Image 1 (tube, rainbow, N blue to C red):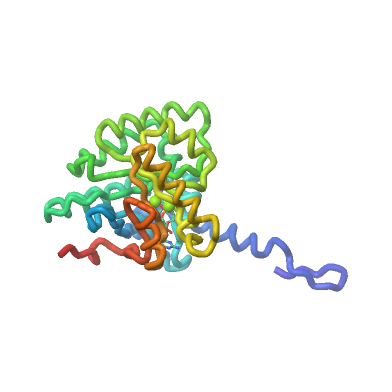
Image 2: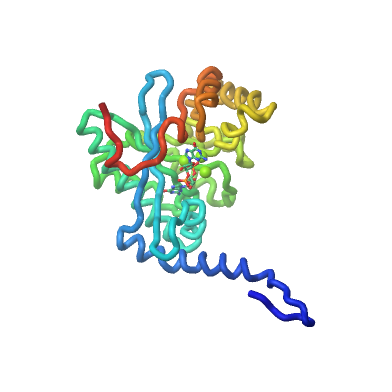
Length: 274
Ligand code: C2E
Ligand code: MG
Ligand code: MG
Ligand code: MG
């Protein structure tokens, strides 16, 4: 948008903002139809367990490609879905797909865990626990095949907190594991670690990324691994893109690694077991 002002042409500050708002509005508007038309997909990324040398977990990642808007990344669509409420639908869709796959792999003798990201907004809905157990019951998926990843990058409302912790605890008692995702980037790690029923932490990829280039990162990551282990947690490093990062993390004692070096996210039909 170019506006005339005193004979000078200046590009309006709002031009880019308009475009962004427009894209956002379109994403918002098209989301429900896309869900109903099954234009959403789930991709799966392997996690390598160091001790066994096996892919023991696959992380489910939502994907949406639109004819007009192109690829809409989760980082773009999840916040909008949290606002318009469709996060519940998306969460249910991804969990259903993941449970179906868990059962399919189970029948092939592959007891693999599926790791599903969940938005804390989903947990602020007081029936989250029931929604999850209902989906598992409907598909017949054993609870120990599913784990939920929650990011520490959130601020709970004090009044919600107890309800969320309580629901998580009940799910954990039923066999569902929790992973604290993007570890090291949130504001309340230590407080949540004390209260949340988590059994794994996933060190954020920004740390993996600068492991070999930033002088202090190595000590930082070593500290996070030792801390996790001292808490009895299983420690995962994400965003592993190179052999050097992989070797160093292994040496430092992580339990598992995930990243493009190990495997990129793909559709389920591309995943083959020997
Ligand atoms: P996340 O859970 O931390 O997932 C890891 C992200 O890093 C994924 O991005 C994945 O594709 C990407 N990634 C994996 N390996 C590498 C690597 O080696 N290098 C780099 N640079 N990136 C790598 P994606 O799929 O775009 O998802 C972004 C975030 O959106 C996720 O972060 C997660 O927080 C959220 N998300 C994805 N799917 C869902 C979902 O179904 N529900 C909810 N609530 N959130 C989701
Ligand atoms: Mg995750
Ligand atoms: Mg992460
Ligand atoms: Mg993330």
